[in-house]
Image 1 (cartoon, one colour):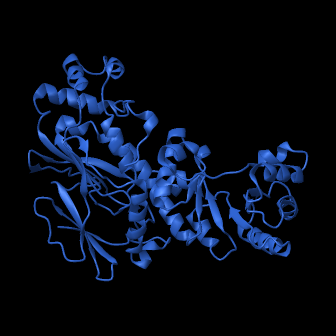
Image 2 (cartoon, helix red, strand yellow):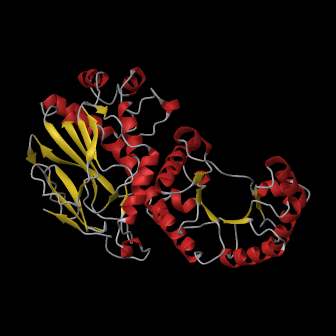
Image 3 (cartoon, one colour):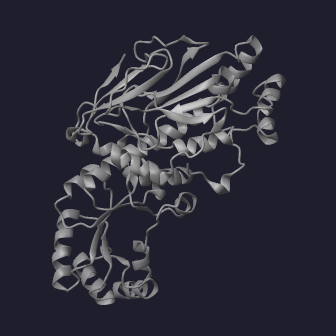
Length: 431
C-alpha cells in the first residue's frame, strides 16, 4: 500500500458530501444507525468503447480511511451542519468495519463488486464519497493508461500531464499511470511520495531564452551531459536536429518532437540522425497523444512517448462510473429498483473463470453466502483489505499492483485488447 508520508495525520473526514453526515444524524436519532449493512462499489457499465476497466487507487483509499477522523477543527466546521449528539458521535468515530475488494491492478467489468464495505450503517455510509472520489478518478486514469501501454507495444511511456489537471490529481494520476505500465512521470511529488521514476529536461521556453538554438542546446548538454533529450521543434525541425547533434555529438541521448505530423517527422528525423552518425539517438514524441495516436505511430521509428492531457483526463472518460450502493441490511438483501439505475441486492463475491491456457473466459458474480464452485483454473477476485477498521498486513505494493495488471492483461482474449468499440472483453454472469 503506497501512502503519503507528508500527509500523515491530516484528516480526510471533510472530503465528503454533507448528506453523508445528515443521514448519520437522522439514523442516530431514529435508532437505525447501528443496523448491520453491506455497501458495494461497482460500475453498471464501462465507458463507451471500452473493453475492460483497471482497479486503481485502493492503496490511496485505505490510507485515507485510516485518517478519516473528526478532530477539533473538523468538528468546529460542522457545528452548524449537525446537532450536538451527532458531533459527539463523530468525535469518537473510527471506521471499525471490514472491507474486501479487487486487488489493485485487477481488471473489472460491468457489475464487478470492486469494493465491499461491511459495518453499521453510520460506520459505512460515511465512506461513500471518499471511496468514490478516489476510485472513480484513479480507475479512469489507469484504464486509459493501460490502453496506451498496449498501443505502445513495448515502447516506454512518460506521464507528463501535471499542467493539465488539479495539483493533487496530478500526483494521483502519476501513480495510476505507473500502475498501468508507464515508465516514468514528470511530477516530482509523485516521485517522492510513491517512488515513481521521474523524467524531464527542458521546454520551448529554454530555447527561446537563448540568443540562438545552438546556444540553448550547448548549454543544456554542458549542464546535463550528452545523454540528455533536446527539444528540436521550436523553429525548423531539420535544422534543430542538425544543431542538436552538433552540440552533443553523435552520442546524443535523444531528441523530442512535440508538434506537427509526428509520424512523418519521426521518419525524417531518424534518417537525418543516422546520416549524421547519431544512430543510437532516441526519438521521443509528445504533443496531444492518446491511445489512438500512439497505435497509429506503431510502425514509425519512435523510441518512447510523452503523454499528458489525454491520460490524466481518462482519455475521454474522466470517471469510471462507479457507484456505492447499500445492498444488505441486517442480513436482508435490499436493492434499488429504478429502471435506469437498478442494482442487485445482497452481498456478493466474484470468480473469474479461465481456460487451461490461462485465457479468461467469464466473470461470475454470485451471492457471498452461496459462492459458486471454483474450478482448478478459476480465481476468487475479492481479497481482504480491512478487518476491524485496520488495513490487513502485507497488502500488495504499487510495484506488486503493476505486475498484477501486467499478468491480468495477458489473460484477456486478444480481441478484448482492441481499441475498436465492442463488448466487454469477457462477459459478466450473475447467478
